[in-house]
Image 1: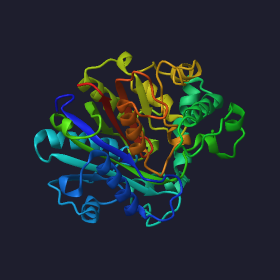
Image 2: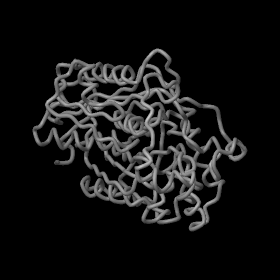
Image 3: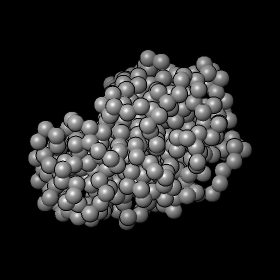
Image 4: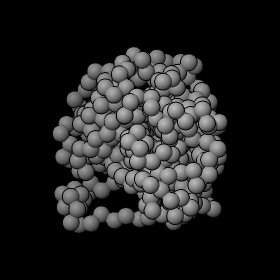
Length: 379
C-alpha cells in the first residue's frame, strides 16, 4: 500500500458513553456506525466492506443492511480495530472493496447483550496459567510490570504519575468519564487491586463504541470531512500466555508492529506530533514509549517525569484521557483511533496545535498482540 493512498473519511463514537442502559452490544455497534456514516455523508448501501471484533461481521452487516464484498473478523483483543484499519487499507488498495466500515461496541459496564466467554480447561491459559490463579488482567499484568520495575528501577510513583497525567488531559475533554484532578497520593492511596496496581492505575469499565469509514484518498474530495491519511501500519502477535513472553520488560509484538509502521511511513520519531498508546494499565505507556523507539530501555519513566507527555510537552500522549480516565469498555483500541483522527482533523478537545502526524499504538490481550497505525493530515 502506498503511504497516503487510503484515508479515513468518517469517524464517530456512540452518541452516549460511560453508562448506557438502553442499548445492547449490537445496538452500540449500530449507533456508532450510523454516527460515522452521518459524519461521512454516507448510507449503508454505500458500504461494501465490514470489519469488527467482539461481534461477528456477519451480524453487523445483516443488522445494518449492508451486503459487503469484503469482511474481516480478526479478533486479537483491544488492538483488533487498529489491525482492522491496516487490513481495510490493504483490501481497498488491492481493489477488493471501496468503502469500509469498522465498528466497535461494548456494554462493558452494563453487560446488556454482552457475550460472556469462558476459559476452556483445554486452552493454553486453562492448562498452564489459570490453575495457578493467573486469571484476570490485573494479576496477569503484574508479572511483566514487576519485572520491569526491578530491572529498571521504576517505582510505584512512576506508575501513579501516568494516571495523574492522563487525568490532566481528561480534564480538557467534556466526554471523559473522569475529569477531577488527581494527585500522586490519590493514586497511591486508592484501593489496592493487585500489587503494584491500585484502582486508579487500572482501566475504567464503561459502555460505548466507535466506528471508522475508510476509502481511497482520491475520493476524499467527495466527503464533507477533512481526510486523515494512513501513512504507515504494522501488526504482530507474541503469546496468549503472559508467562511465555520472550522478555517481561519488552513486548516483541510492540517492537515488530511499531518498526513496520515507521518503515512504511518513512518518518522519524522526531516527526511525530501526537501519540496514542493503549493504557489499560499504567505501565503500558512505559512499554510503548520504549518499544516504539521514542526513548531507550528504562528511560520512559524519566521522560514522563520530565513532563514530555503532559499538556504543553514535547510529545503529547493519550490526549483524550486514555483508558484510565476517558473510556475503556473492554477493548480500547477504537477510542485511541478516534482521538488520533480528531487530532489530525484539528477538532480534538485538547487539540495539539499544528499536529500533522499521529501514531496510534495498541495492545491486544496481555501483550499477546499489537497494532500500530501512523496517520497524517497531509499526503
